[in-house]
View 1 (cartoon, protein in one colour):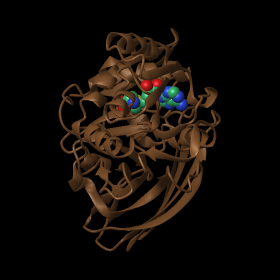
View 2 (cartoon, helix red, strand yellow):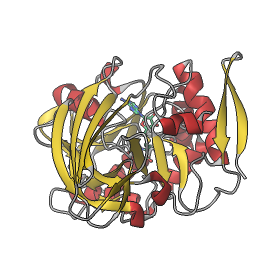
View 3 (cartoon, rainbow, N blue to C red):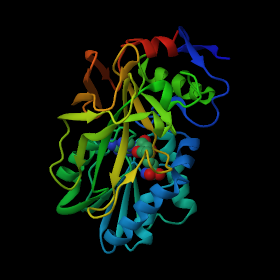
View 4 (tube, rainbow, N blue to C red):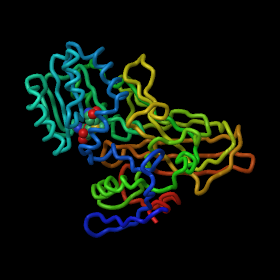
Length: 363
Ligand SMILES: C[S@@+](CC[C@H](N)C(=O)[O-])C[C@H]1O[C@@H](n2cnc3c(N)ncnc32)[C@H](O)[C@@H]1O
């Protein structure tokens, strides 16, 4: 049975949140968290124990770090990539962290591990810091479940312009956000459309940071792949060592490959740590990156094999100058008609309960 949880932020504003008390395991709904300054020990531990993610970063550093000056942007409390750079033979590493509490924990760990001679730790946002000499390697895990959601395009562009030598290299090399048509009910497998109970502390922190409620991105942990019923295509491409764009527009056409229903799209990350390596795929592999569901149509639309979903995704930097908003438009062509739907997935703001799925989740 689903329950209503009363959520209060900043002492006064309240909303109800729909919770599935049984949603502990399998496909569940969470808010997307990586793009907000709400990291805590649990999130850092989740990242640090993601074996696939870590091994890909380590392999890239073993190849590129020897002899270089490395810059680790968003080092976290464990200084993972600064330490790994030194272990792989970097001459020196500079680590940057913006969150106060995380920085203090990193500072404590750096001293405890006796690494302060090889790693320089700086407190602040990379866009407001300078380093001397410039780095010839930049490594950062500021990649979201929607690849660019944590501001990677703006942050790496700035680092390449100011903090790195002209011949410096970036790890990861590139990433894409893939999209496919889905029916939310199906990707949630046997679960109901409701938040997991463990989502409540994250919702509370995000809304407190935003100073109000808004339509948070819906992160689907372990979506059931049987709910994905169209082909997939990239709707965001970020080339960190090449032509890196902070804003972009992508148009793709997806084909329904079996009969079912569509009410939105699922977005997920493909991450290429090195130019030549196969991607880490957040839908196919077991990793801490999840998928994000974007609602498009007010109800489930029946589709047949061969029907087409044309998507246009406009990625625009939000008013904080770093984190993007995503404007997704879909045109679904079926034998019974053509359906148009859209959704603006904003990083922050005050648009709340804009779509039936949000009115279900926040009744
Ligand atoms: C996903 S966590 C990664 C932590 C660690 N590097 C790892 O991979 O395990 C991203 C971290 O980057 C920090 N961060 C994000 N943008 C930053 C920026 N522009 N400058 C400094 N720190 C940043 C966040 O506070 C957070 O600690």
